[in-house]
Image 1 (cartoon, rainbow, N blue to C red):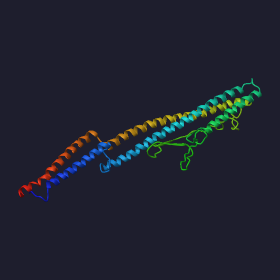
Image 2: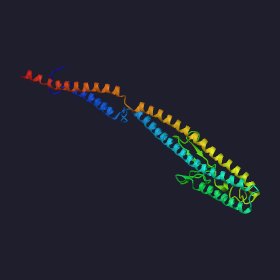
Image 3: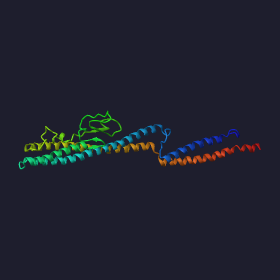
Image 4: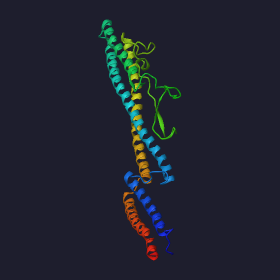
Length: 295
């Protein structure tokens, strides 16, 4: 190579290599400080796109877990209210049994009738007042087999959505709760044509015993359905958590930096940068050798 003054090719080459080494060193510092291998789209364009899709699914699955937990809380609220209704039904059957015997006169049966109707009214009050987050549970609003979510307020059975898509076989199912008011159970003075209307006479009390038995069975069917749905939601939560965990692991392998490997690259780039600075200094001084020939 000729000794020239206008063009210092060794310095230009050293500067270019230093720029590359310094850029790689900057990338290593960014990755180690952020913990991310893919910090920008330029790091891994395809990996970034896949990662963002995974992150969206992970966020959706985690929200699905919360949705399912809310569904369990709703079911437990309904089941707790039905447990109180159960106590009222047992008391009503006890009163009907008492009124069905011939050792009481009509005045005494009217006293029993008064408490019987009070229990029926309390069952209706509990059914109408039990709600979860503004959704009434036992008044028949959720008893329909048809769900319509087109309006601002959904009607019919309640939809619990937990999956990341909208496939009915994978991403959601419904909670349907029967009507648990006294009239729906066939009891009390609002159920005019039912045998559980009254216990004011001995014959009426005997008929009410059968009606109360049917009411308890209807109530137990509602509770059994709720219990089965709660178990199903708990299994769903376990499955969603496993999915989210494995998807998070896959996203981590794409996105997160391997600290050991990147630290090796950092040291390598650091040494190369230091060497580049030293060689650039030496290359810049080479032009001074021409002055010795001139002098």
